[in-house]
Length: 160
Image (cartoon, rainbow, N blue to C red; front, side, top):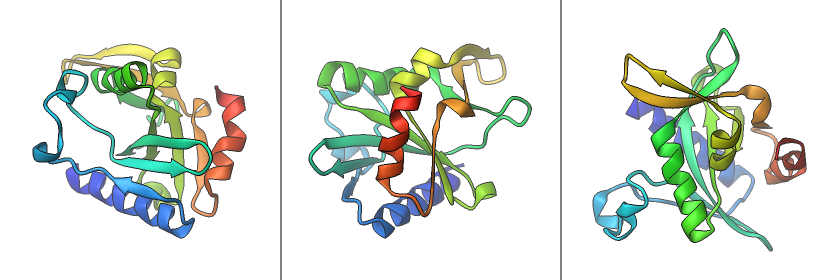
């Protein structure tokens, strides 16, 4: 699983570089993580994307496939709440960006963490004994490898 996450991050970084989108890749080791910040979150986003004249957004890249039967993505409830804590306490936008090897990492699905909580249906997984939110693919903004951030921002009003 971690290898797939690393591959998704690598492919996302390539997409950012291809479109000359400035970013910082956020290290995930414990030494780079403030103890004071741990009370708000235990898992941090993967990238900080800098958007000229706007600011930045934090991005958590996931290697995810939609559920086949209902065409929905599942998001861990606790992790999503932590991402929303960053938004609420520090006014930082945190977005999920999803892709997978089935689509050759040529398509990226974007959604703000706050929209996952707002629009997702809450379920409890008996297998993993955790809660998750299921969100229809229609709720996510689809950006192809040939698109740049302009596509994301032009589609945003339809989804938010």
